[in-house]
Length: 246
Image (cartoon, rainbow, N blue to C red; front, side, top):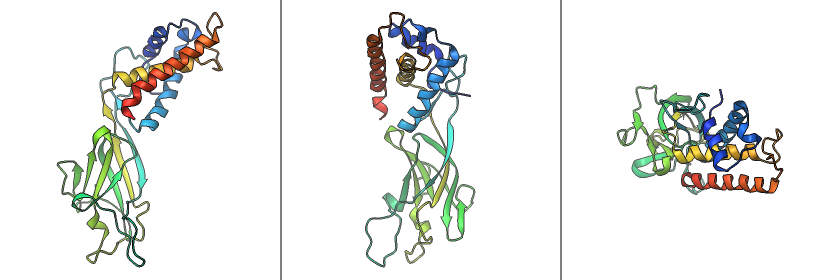
């Protein structure tokens, strides 16, 4: 089922605002849905962000706008300190209160469902184990691990570095590369109007593009120069609306 950060009606409204009444404005809903979906996934990857509306929105009969957070699992390195003297062990880079931290691949991380951390014998799930405590900042500050969402929604996972060293400060694992597998849920509740408008404009620009295989963008008067100007204007306005999230 395709998803998108705007509705079909939003795209048609963007086309009307661009004063375009050609074939694109009358395009089949299925074609508009494809245009929306093709703009949504790249945007999530570009901004590393997902938006959703738990109760849905009005005028979205295709059910494009997401209603729930998303989840993913990533393999991560534990960052290590700077240059070491020859013969000295490589140890985790630490920040405040002896924690090392990993920036997650998506913003707005809400919770960690599994946290597989390397040991001398394999991996141990810190979430499932009774030996480790953790949660979200600030309640979990001082625990073995905690998840913190910083300004702009950037999400970082803090791990107590003491768990990676023995009593002599020697590392307990051979390598800190790919030492953590983190399973987490992410998403921002509420779809901002500027994101919704930007995706609608990008989808409208795609439908208007002169080189579209379906030729949906060719206006009745054949004025491709004017059409190209409208496409560029839509793309520029969309970029301006999204700038705050970059």
